[in-house]
Length: 231
Image (cartoon, rainbow, N blue to C red; front, side):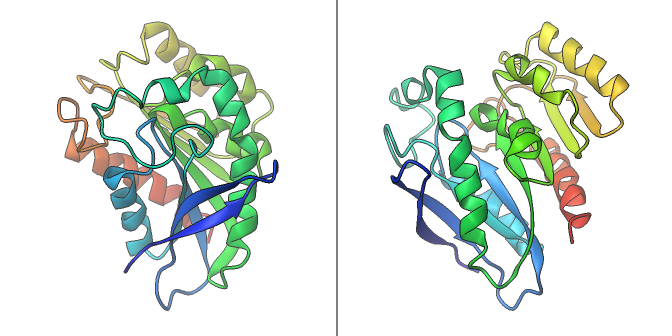
């Protein structure tokens, strides 16, 4: 099963790249749209997309940085962090791109019209924004960053959310985890997992000091469980 790179026109008229995998011979199925870390659509993210496709789901990973430094960057590339700044502004800029990805999926006969959004690190907030107002049916965040700024977006949210962090994640200090624990306690649709000893970037082999294959598998299984409900 091979992915392909397509071009999608954004709301502002610009085009951006998107890595798309459609399972061969698949019956109609939901899609998983992946919001990347600041490293972009690299080998780690494509491998995760391929895992969703291997389970019979469409997988799409847009390049969130096509307006600055497009393409994937190594984890130690100094150009990675600046291209996501100012972070809140950049995240807002790309909201319409995720609507455009949904529209592009309409061209795929295998798509059943429903989609979840999974975000990693920088892409974590889209797990909330996607279901809140971008047309997605569910959201998953793995070691998301800047998440405290998006806590108010949970107000009135009734779609399924799954948020996962390590308790040694430097990008999710105790106030972040405490705030989301409180939210999970009052929201039946919010599933929260905090892993003891896990660090930032635990799902990504490229994050060599944090990668944890068992936690990665657990996180993807939780994402697959949400996808299964969208069939």
